[in-house]
Length: 149
Image (cartoon, rainbow, N blue to C red):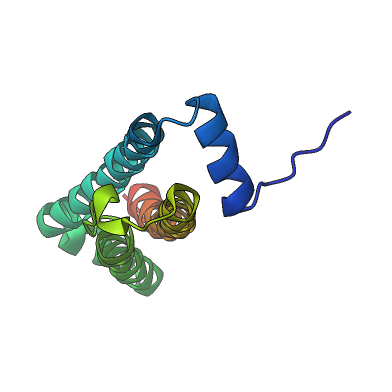
């Protein structure tokens, strides 16, 4: 059984350049598509957080009014969801074009982009986990409301 070993940015840059037969433009296109995928997925997280905030505006008072626990859970869920949205926006959605990483050495250029992509990927995962926690708290508050009806 083979275990996954993540590549270093240098190894991955070499691999991409090899797969693209040394064509830097094709290698940049590969990385740009990966960044676009990451941004699209981050947009989904932002939309879910926005939906949570919007629903809270309509039904938050009704949910929170059932018990102190529901009140605490909905506020915590809302704050964590909002924080995750801000975190994802600042860490993942920031724009920096792949061509802004230009260096004389193609391999070094690709390494820089891969390192930035890795940072954004880690931030996306953390933001998603935070949003999941916020939604969990929000759902618990909702469950308390339903059970006390």
